[in-house]
Length: 602
Image (cartoon, rainbow, N blue to C red; front, side, top):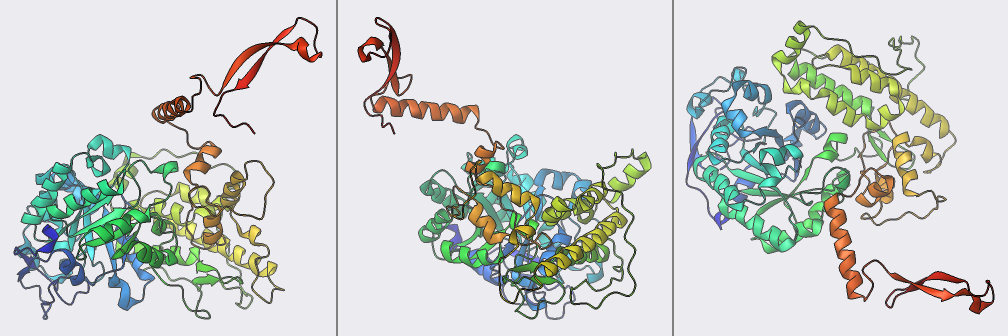
């Protein structure tokens, strides 16, 4: 296999090279840090993985959602000495557009204060003064970093990869995107039918790119076919494979559970030196270690779990050392407060996204604080009614919003709706204020932060009031802490029947047990638990396609024939004389239904 050998190609290494800023991937640092040219062998496979510190936690590539500011926020909850232990991926970029359109490139990836040189000139970049570095891939705080592309053309992929190679540790090929746009563009998971093209793209970058090529894939219909698919990718030259444990059709309401058993099968069948990242089913920090143990993967990647809780990679602080940012309840469950996380996020936006000092802020509220002498004025809000009608924007305003195209600003609203999901479901004034924010409207987002801080304060006071007399861990009043959205979700599962104390703990048929495990008060960052497909069908939020219905009908027909049933069903009709029982008028007949052989009635 290709993964068993090291490439002898050479690349130019500048400014200290790796994620920790101290050494290059083969262990030889620049030492003087003056950006002098440094040549070394291109590492491959496990040798490359070890060169970036063998990270166990990975921030997934997410379209317009894993940009620099979000990567910084996710890393900020780790101890400063461990922040380079998180391998992060950029959002997915379109290779052809990235290479051919400077505006697209400069609005999505900003490693330098000036535009990225095109064509790529590694030597020139290695001679740049460190002050020329900007955000993405900065050796001081954004490494290790992998840049991900979607592509269906080997030349486009290589050309785009060369532009980012001086600013990252590896380039990843997206083979997992299941969305409709990927189908129309013929990339992502819709390349699964063209293994030859996939192999050509990976092989070309393995042979001609100065840094390693990796790939992110989804599992196929069977584990055997998935193994064959993975071998094709690895044999072509991929240094690392990330395996999403869901099939291509598992998305939206049909997301369901990732199948970790397939990942374990790959781990056992592939050579030991193969580096595998696992992706799927990561809702909380504890799931990371569980996934490592059950799959045997080298590292665990989180996507949606990180969007709803950017603290997911960090261990909870010890009991008694929570501080003002972390909340822990009487039952021992806890998490980072939403106001604390949003504060960090806004400070990163100010410092890095806008290049300005963050505003001074008062300490976060704690119920144990002494009574405030001066009450802060609440922001003027009139959000009790429906959201205000959107105002028409002038051409100047639109031009200003489209001007900078700062990826750290364009992603803010989407991030905050994910982060604050349980809170905005309860506090509609926060929801409406956030909905009115526009790209670059930092003042508007600061107003949202003020509202969030007020809402969290209200929640903390309410919790303390309800638990004033508690002297031991208790789950009393837990129902009062559930957001209206989660309460609705649980009611759906009852199917109109009386609630019982027994929770269905089969994760394939019910999400109740998972909701109970993950649920936190609405002011705490927490996972969003999707209903499993069975529940989505019962709720009516997912319907079977015509193709699926036809498939089920055909299967039912074949089953009926095998059981000796009539084509039209499990019964046949027969005319009988009703007068035999003496209950009807003599001579009157009726039609009755007679079960066929093989049908169990009960």
